[in-house]
Length: 319
Image (tube, rainbow, N blue to C red; front, side):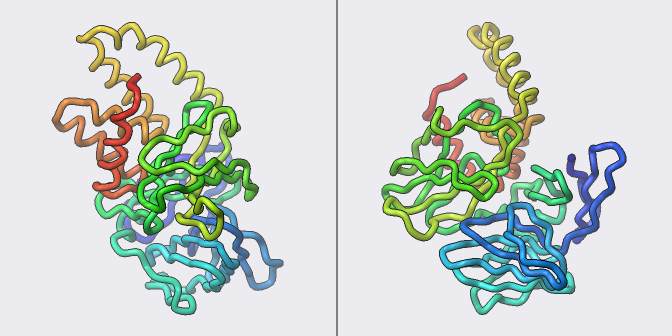
């Protein structure tokens, strides 16, 4: 699957990469964030568990169970945030969505970005995950604790490091795969990478979701944030690139050239955290600004959060 730039607001257009595959009809909504358990009720069909990227039809009812949370992107209506034992009916029209029992609200500054470009993260059967293609006014889910990395991107390393800001002094990272929790970290503080290492082996090509919870457990501190483990082919290309650039990067005149080559590779791989880290090391200029904007848009971070992540990444070891 690849995403096609949209010419007009309000259209959900996806180009199918597989030969002979049909383009799915426009969705009335898409589940773009999910923590805990939610059910989708559809007229004439048995209730189904909600899943990240699930397409929603008009009049579908999303039921979020107690302790859960969901974010629903509505065609023409921005993002609706559902929290803790909430029922929400997808509107029939494309206008602004009604509140769900007084608990749902529309996120400001998100509609234009979401409708001007979509990135398809995983779509084996017509489901979508979306991300704005521009950085201005990008939406950041959750208040207090904000997941910074990985976000809406491809992780090319065999393991993953988590970064977040805000929230309590100590929190746990929780990771799920196919609705099952596969890893829960020890309590850790924000502002420093939490490396899962071999405790969380990533299956190539799979989409994972992570969120933060209090040290002692309880209601989530943030919405679920997806990332995708790179395919074996992307991992192999990344390994070959880094090996070939190692000698070049060790020379003063070659270090900048190596960074530009890396930047092209990681941009093409949608590895936005790596793009942000590399762009932050470039000299001031148009290339640096464009790369930083692309990384912030891919990560769906506002300018301040993107700058905070870049600063945290700058404290870590360089390639």
